[in-house]
Length: 180
Image (cartoon, rainbow, N blue to C red):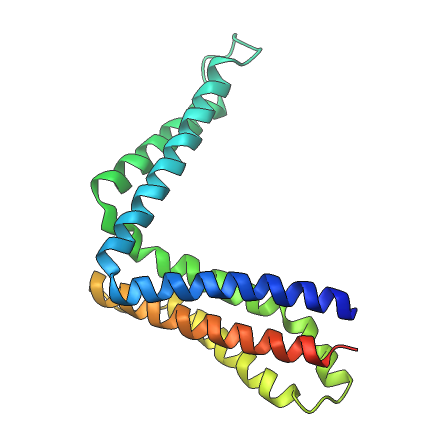
């Protein structure tokens, strides 16, 4: 990995981490409002996906087939959008799993940097390895989060997201400064 790639990755990670920190703080201090906004956005996106599938079904070339994947896709999207619209807190149960999965995958992508630091016998390898392990554990906690209360779950998610983003910025800073 070149110094330029590390620098570009650092700034991308920094921007994403700042956005995750903001999201985490909102979840921590305004969980109900944040969940409502997320629910509305997911409802709108899912409904648009359904409309797109319906459009593809109505404008298809082969009109001889009565049933088509696009119409099934659209109906499922509309049902999901309706459920989320009627029960906006329903996404709270899925949100930690999705975010935890994102954290785990994003952290695993940094494994290459970690190997590079180990191979070059860098003094920051131990700190980066510890941060790497904590970030993986953070993601696993979110995936298997046993909390049932919506408010408690949202605040825990906010706390873990903020913690993850700070660790991600530290780790990326250490990587950027240690790549030759």
